Length: 117
Image 1 (tube, one colour):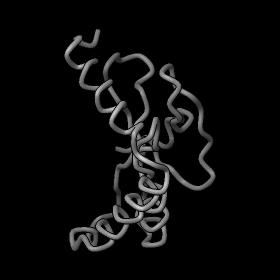
Image 2: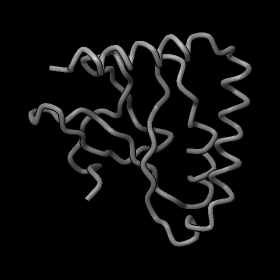
Image 3: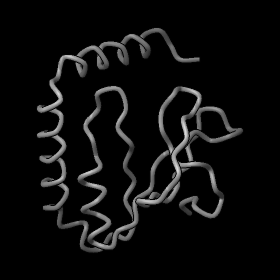
Image 4: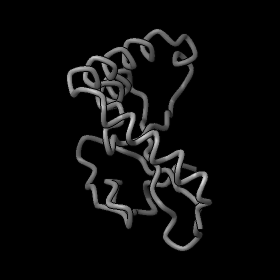
């Protein structure tokens, strides 16, 4: 169970995100990509974990597409099917099938062959 203070913080953040215009979110998403592209640490990285945008969050897809162009594998968190409160990270590609989890958030369909080890 999530504590009430944690729920309040989530609601406050959601309310703040909902005040942002879609053009602001789009611009911020492109700034995120530009920032990621400048990270020198990515020169030696083969895997990066990101998320899929939900409920007014920044859209990481421009960053994800740039990472793919660099040959870097992208992994997305999914709810663990039987360990409550745990996440798995699954390989994400342009052809990955997405499903809605119990919170209505899109995530890759669970496939043990795609789990990040």
